[in-house]
Amino acid sequence: MISIKGLNKTIQDKPILKDINVDIKKGRLTSMIGPNGAGKSTLLSIITRLTECDDGEVTIEGQAIHDYKSNDLAKKLSILKQTNHTELNITVEQLVEFGRFPYSKGRLKKEDKEQVEYALEILQLQEIRDRYLKTLSGGQRQRAYLAMTIAQNTDYILLDEPLNNLDMKHSVQIMQTLRQLARSLNKTIIVVIHDINFASCYSDDIIALKDGEIIEANEKDEVIQPTVLNTLYDMEVRIEEVMGQRICIYFDETSVDEATYSAQTI
Image (cartoon, rainbow, N blue to C red; front, side, top):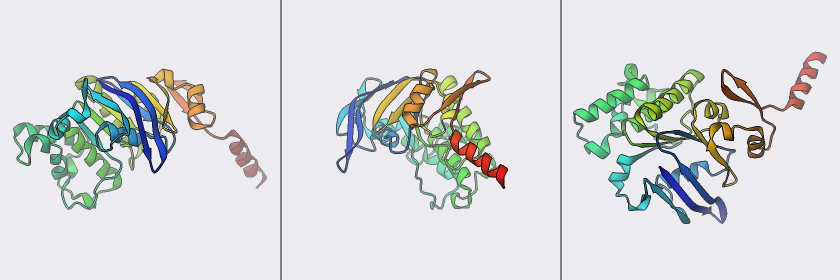
């Protein structure tokens, strides 16, 4: 379990995170949702020790993150950030092999190669494993970096907007894969995601952030509620149940009516 207590962060005199208190349960897929500037990426970065908090504490399985040696933490926790180095002159397979560095130090053993093959397979990258990153589409690159993160084989996997540049088919594939990792391999997956319907359909738990504060953190059905989402996004969100899943419907009815009227008068 990841436990966050009394976390605060200010950047250039602007409060980014305010008294964050939340437990992230082990073996579950937790999504962070909220508008731009809510503090989601900053919180993810602090959990992974890439950014320092002003005060508060983050613990992983009872041990403060600052007490972990860097290499030990890299074997416990992995992160995929929003921005990646696309100019690297390496192949997909070579990139995925980087995920094994905490274990192999650049000299891959049998177990390392098995983890690389596993990551290439579940992200369906075998056919482009020898392609150079700079020749790939944005979606292919995103999947390659995700495969690198999965090849690291950590208990905790943190992903900052992993569906960037992905089409609908591959977005579904990624979310299904993440859910499978949580349920079958007891991985703890934390995802920053903007599509609330993907969060609703694939998450176990959801953390809703706005203006650096937690609006709600609970099992997904407790968060996917009109009262929570209306407050979170400052707009009306209607919930419909489709095949047992809560689907969020959000649009400006006035704009739709005006567009319909305009079309009828042309």
